[in-house]
Amino acid sequence: MKSVIKTGVVAAVAAVFVASVAVAGGQGQRRGPGFGGPGGPGGRGLMPAVMQELTDEQRGQVRAIMQEQREGQQRPPADARLRHELQAELLADVPNDVRIDELKGQILAAQAQGLDRHIAVQQRIAQVLTPEQRAKARERLAEAPALKNR
Image 1 (cartoon, rainbow, N blue to C red):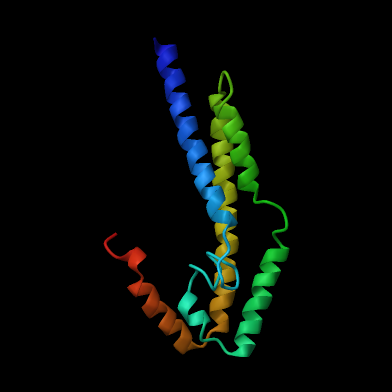
Image 2 (cartoon, rainbow, N blue to C red):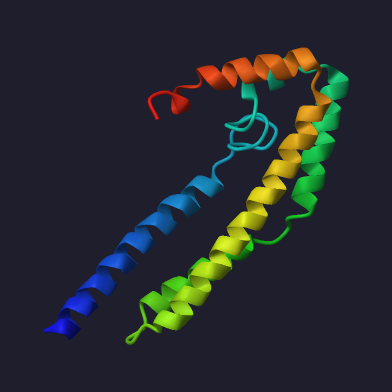
């Protein structure tokens, strides 16, 4: 009986994981009209509306920052490969809980590195802005619907 329950739980976790990877994978493929698509300075990043008000010189600086970031990331993110390995382990006939925990830790570390890179790029972009543009970005960020009622 315990074996049936454990198998059911593993199958449910695997199904949820497959769905979350499919949704996340689809989100990463879309590109918006901004400099970098969603998450980039012209998308849902730090200051999308302010980016429309850049001078030509600022726009060139932001493009250079984004190009440098893209060149440094020519291959798929490490967490994508690790998630694939995790999925394979979850679907194994006998999932190895130790390996699952190892992969989970590696995925978290890879995501932290990605967040560090994102923050570094956003900080560089923020420094291109004038103090007035940064103030306007802060105002718009405070008004963003995603932050209300949380």
